Image 1 (cartoon, rainbow, N blue to C red):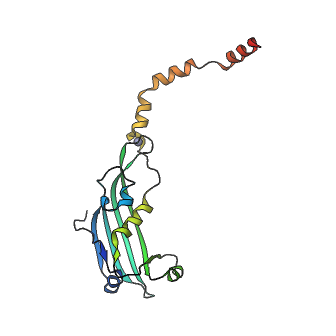
Image 2 (tube, rainbow, N blue to C red):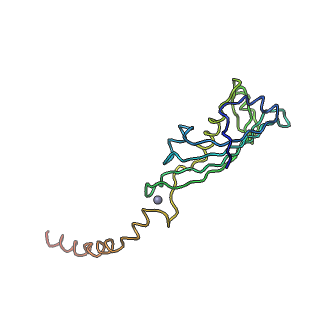
Amino acid sequence: MLTEPLPNTLDVRKAAARGANVSGTLGAVKLPRFQALLADESGAIDAYLAFSRDEEDRAVIALKFEADVSVECQRCLQSMPLHLAGENTLAIVWTDEQARHLPRHLEPLIVTGEGYNLWELVEEELMLALPAFSYHDTEDCLQILSEYAEPAPEQEKGDKKPNPFDVLAQLKQDT
Ligand SMILES: [Zn+2]
């Protein structure tokens, strides 16, 4: 885990011109949209940003992140640990028009001012990396454990099911 906090804002074009590397740790609580999808406030993120200019003289950011968070299991509704990791390469552009002309391997990052919020940039990537649904592994899931724990009542219920032929016979008698 990194120990230095990730800076909040940075002049990303200057960083690219300098070839700066910026990394740091960040609590998920600092990212309200991402935090809203988590089960508790313990989430921690490490982010690594390498700024450079590519062969076409574009300002680019190679971004990598790892995060350990808790999310709600969609089966038993208990919290479960989730590890997220990902990377992306972004090109800093001024306009939509420039964004449209980027090669496919570059994701546009439209930056019109001097400072850009690195936290929001990382948050965006985390939101994309988060699976829509998370489930415990079978042996850890409370829902599945409770189903295994009560096989007997299930069995009894099955035995008491009315025989469809009896029901049919009953219907015939009634008419
Ligand atoms: Zn579960």
